[in-house]
Each structure stands twice: as C-alpha cells, then as structure tokens.
Amino acid sequence: MARPLATPPVAGQSALRTWRRQRRARLYRALLAVLAAAVALGLGAIWGGAYFGARSTAAGGWALAAPAVGSAAAAVALWPRQGPDRWARGAAGEVATAALLAALAAPRWTVLHDLAVPGSRANIDHLVIGPTGLWVVDTKAFRGRVVVRWGRARVGGVPLATAAVRWEAEVVSDRLAVPARPVIALHGPVLPRRPKRCDGVCVVAATRLTRRLRRGALLRPTLSAGRVQEISRLAERQFGRAAG
Image (cartoon, rainbow, N blue to C red; front, side):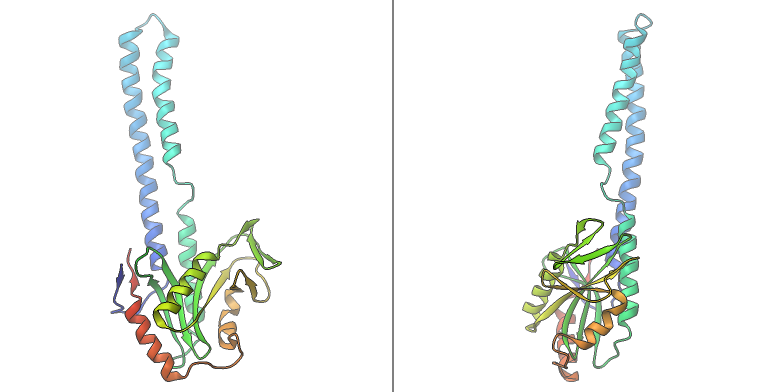
C-alpha cells in the first residue's frame, strides 16, 4: 500500500526494512532449530531408555541420533537460500545513488526515492523528472564484475534482471501519461565504461548516471520547468512511500 509523501522520501528504506525482517527471521529459525533438536534429543533418550534400556547400545544410539538428524534436516530446509546482507548492500547502493542524483537541482529537476507501486509489493528506487523526461532508476550493487556483451549484461555469469524496472517504467508511463525510460544504475568493483542498452534498459555505472540523464535520449530538453513541477505533483499523488 502506498502512503502519501508527507515528508521527503528517503532512499533505501524498503531494502533496510527487508534486511531487518530477514535478520529476525534467520535468528528465529536458528532458535527454533536449537529448540527442536533439544526436544528431539530428550524424547529420543526417553524412547531409547524405555524400549531398549541397557540391552542394546546401538539401538539406543540410533534412538538419540535419528530425531537430531531429522531436526537438523528441517532447519536446513527452512534456512533462507539468500542471506540478508544483500539487502543491506542494496540499501547502501540506493543511498549512494540518491547522493549522486542530488546534483540535479530544482526546479528543473525533481527526484523521488523509494516509491510504492500501487497494487503490488514492488517499489521504485528512484523516479527522476527533468528536462530530458521521466526516468525510472533501479539501483543494483554487486561484488562481482559486470560484463555487457551483445546486448546482454551478466554478473558473475548470471544474467542481470531487467524485467522489473521495465515493468515499473510502464506503470509510471500509464499513471503519469508521460513516457518513462528505465535505467539500471550499477555499483560494483568492475563496471562498463559506457552506458549500454540491454533488453530495452539503459545500464550505466552509477557514477555516470547524472551525465546520462542530463543528455537524455534526444540530447535536448523535452519538458519545461513548469511541466516538470506539474508531473512531480502528480507523481507524489500517484506513488506514495513504499510501505514496509
């Protein structure tokens, strides 16, 4: 659910909330696994003593080991496949991108962060409105090298996901009645030197983002300062701060 923008939006808040939730969930799972193992061992000891007593050491040992192994297997099955640290890294990346976008001065530019997409759990990292049009910017922070070849971007051999930001740009275009262009701003140790086009998305190193936005697609202004402010007010009504 979206909430009105009563206060200035802050970059990375949704990612930080997700990071905190996942850390709590991981702690709860660890405590549950320890408790389940302790209970299982206790029950196994009771069951082994009652049914086998001192007559069968091997059977008693299996009675103790089987519940503990089962509890460990359940804990592994419930453990999150991806650690919460990636959300903290993503939040830090969004904050860094917001700092770079701060160079785009009002009233010719408006930058909104961490906006909710109505009717979904998705959020828009950054919405930039300026002389060159509307830009939906998705921040991604990686530890590995980003390679762009033949119109495809890969990170550590894994394709870079572009579908989400394309869809967000479509939603913004529909609701604001102005074409919005999707951009992925990259943070990482090894990045492409120049902006690249991948699956209809501009992929650019975050340090070159503002230069790309200023130039735009046609290398000339398309929105007046008055139009920028008009669209900005509409965007604040259509997209509230992401709920978490």
